[in-house]
Length: 323
Image (tube, rainbow, N blue to C red; front, side, top):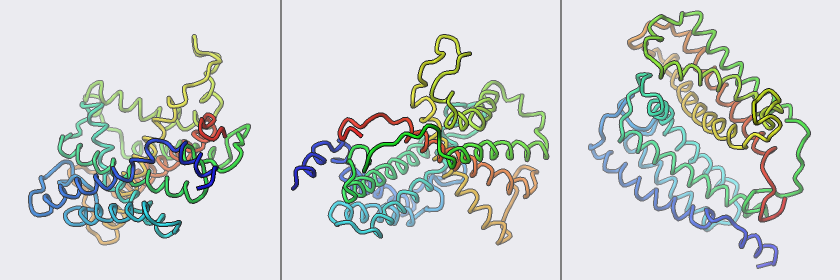
C-alpha cells in the first residue's frame, strides 16, 4: 500500500469501517421479518394497508436480498460502474418503499392533523429507511475509494467556494417556491373549505410550516441571509447562521417529499392510464391531483437540489485532507 493510500485509510471515517457489515446484518434481520410477513403474518397497517410502498410480500424480501448481494459485491469487487449503479438503485428503491414515513413524522409532530400513526408501521418504515442509509453509505465509500477521493469528505481537488450560489441552485430554489405556490393555487381553485380551521392548533402549525418550507426555506439556501443573520434580527444580526439550521430541514424535506410524491406521481399516472383512479371519500376532481402532486414533487426536488448546493458551499475544511 502506498503512503498516500495508507494515510487515506487511516483518515477514513468510522462509518466506513462498519457500514457494510451493518448493511449485511440489516438485510438478514429485516429480510427475516419480511419473510415472516410474506408467509401470511403481515399486519394491515395505515394508511394503505401495508407498511411499504410498491414492494409488498415477496417483493420486499427480494429487495432485502438485492441489498445484501450488492453490498457483498461492493466489499470485494474492484471498480465496476454497473455495480455502483445497482447499489444506488437499491438505495433509491428502499427510500421509495419507506415513503409513507413522511406522513408518520408529520402525524407524530402534529397529532391534531388527523393522520393515523401505527407504531409497527413507523418502525418498519424507519428500518427500511435505515437500510437505505447503510447501503448508500457503502456505495459512497466504494466510489470514494476507487476515485482516489478523500474517504472522509469525498473531495478530489482544491475546494473552490463561489462568491454566490450557482445558477442551477437558484433555479432549483425558485422551482421549489413555484411548486408550493402551484399547490396553493390548486387548492384555491377548488376551495379551502371552512372545516380546516376547526382542527385546532396542530393544523395551524402545519399550515405555517407549509408556507415557511415552501418560501423562506428554499430561498434561505441561496440568499445571503441564509448564511448570515440580517441586520433586523435582534441579538443575532451579523452572526453566521448555524449550518444545519437550514440544511437539516431542507435535506430531510427534500428527500421525504421527493420519495413520497415521486411514488404518488407514478401511481397517479398508472391509475389514470388504466382507468382505475378512485377519488375515495372526498370530492376533489382528478385535475386537482395532477396539479398538486407534481407540484409537491417539483417542490421536493428543488428543495433537495438547493440543499446540496448549500451543503457544498458551507461545508468546513476537512480535518482529514485539509481541503
